[in-house]
Image (tube, rainbow, N blue to C red):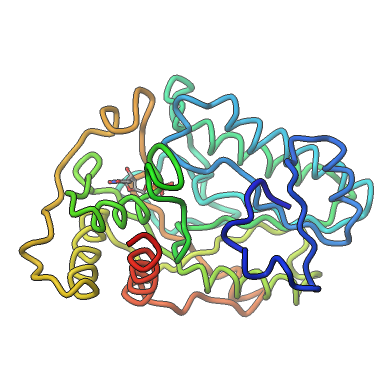
Length: 305
Ligand code: UDP
């Protein structure tokens, strides 16, 4: 079920799939979804550029709809796999240590900084889910999944500012300078979407072990500052496009508030502990950042050029 099937067009005619163009904001749709034995909820507004001006919608999408879905799943007996976010760890500092699911405090910024509307809504959805005594649940906390088909190219198949991978890809393809927000010093652990899919199948195979657990899903070996990411992507793009690196524009600096609007703040570092997923599900991420960037950029160049 989705609002847009463009990314999975090639599966549309498969007899193994049934697609429905619906919105889980609709209560009747939620009841219908919950009648299935297993529900994986990936529906969410999850683009940081929207957390400032559209905080009400962000909270509805990331708390109210999942909460209604969880309540319906508890009644029907469905197993709910809820996609949450690594952003529940909140306003982490540059010195942040490994983030552990059941130990690390979840610390948000001021309510006036509406960047945190998303993290707060996701955290409350997790707490709602965990509060339902009869619900079979699993919570997934993604750490910056990347891959082909991520987000959109501004002005082509979407408006506004996509997340960093698609934004940098768009600038490279357009021969524009990459924007480094607040100096590009924030760090992220980028995780290939293929590792994320493997994780999901490890959950499916371990229903009992995964029950009542929140899991970090990320690649702790792929940590980079955003400035380092920009450089890696310039080099990879130059290679794909057969360009001299010196001709690929240098990044420029921009303040977070100028770029995203009033209320933008950032988490400076988030490295997942993946011990729990290794221990309970036998999963860990395997794909290097080099490989994930090459695959993503190749797809992006082919698709948009
Ligand atoms: N960022 C950046 N330039 C961009 C887009 C994002 O410097 O064009 C930074 C952003 O400020 C943050 C990091 O890249 O520090 C990751 O941002 P993204 O929107 O991908 O997702 P987040 O991890 O913050 O949810």
